[in-house]
Amino acid sequence: MQQFDLIIVGGGLVGAGLAIALQDTQLKIALVDARKPSNEDPRLFALNESSCQFLKNLHLWQALENDAAPIEKVHVSWEKHFGAVRLKNEDVGLASLGHVIPAKQIELVLNERLANLPNVTLFRPATLINLTHAENVATLQIKQDEQTFYLQTPLVIGVDGTESTVRKEAQIEVERVEYAQCALVTRTLLQRSHYHVAYERFTKDGVIAMLPLKTAENPDNECATIWTANKEKINHLLQLSEVDFIAALQNEFGYRLGRLVGITKRHVFPLQKVKVTSSLPACILLLGNAAHTMSPVAAQGFNLAIYEVAALVDCLQDNKFDLADFRRKISQQETSSMNLSHYLSTLFDKPIPHFVLSAGMVALDVMTPFKKHFINQFIGRAGSVPRLLLSMDA
Image (cartoon, rainbow, N blue to C red; front, side, top):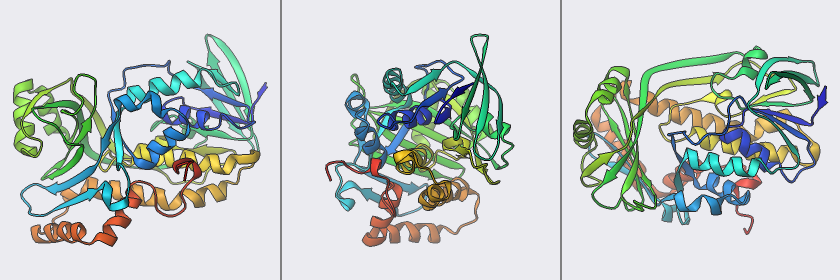
């Protein structure tokens, strides 16, 4: 039986980020991950400015900035409706509202740091076979390279995704909402610069997000494309030739980014909402997709997970942890992020009159104080902000 102060189950972006964020503590940590490190994740993350500051405070930003495209403006519109919402970095006095970074680049940098943490024992690839818990202790049975290990800790943190094994072993209940939609993800080459503007275009049956990307070959004329729609439409788009897909995308998105001239491989992800509904045992905590999976609309999921990690680090300082205090710290951000994501994911199902949508967008665009509050909420700067999301120079 090996004893640890903390066991993290799940070594993806959130689990690895948590372990690195705790590198300067005296905690003896085990990280159990079912996967080997990979460089194949096709997702493209829009990190808000607070999440970027988190990576800067962990001294990881220097290795990421060459692949990080700044978002200076956000433009939200609705197909065949007048009016738009424009959010600008100048509205809140920041150099940018966030950055878009390929998930595989973040994972690469995190794994390089993770391999060199003296207070972290890695079990990878390893499978969680069994988890039992009493009031103040959890025992994990894991299997690695045909060997069985038993680990014990006062706190298990499950960050092992939407189908969390920790959650299942602890018999924690969830609410599921199937959106009957999928997200198609690709990279789109532009004829001109994107000028660091992120676009969110609502259509009659989904959303098209076009987010600025940055690569050595295409420093300012490539975008991350996330197109959500019902499964039938996404399957149809998947079968189109590259030329026909570009034509369909150009037709629905329009010419705000000029002419679209190429795409990369297309990937499809099903969309659903998953949220924990039952109380958690005192020695088990869930973060990220294990606690709440949401649609990529408005880019809330990964940013909320980073917010939770930063808040948890605050609570774990000096080897102290108060679950009730942690829940209080994250409740406002969690509720607002999930509500925004769910509302926008189902907006096109609602019979809302055109003039109401247009008037609402125009009102938000011109009401500067309300828009400022919305941006601060969007970038994780509303209410109590965890220390790791703030500039250490401030």
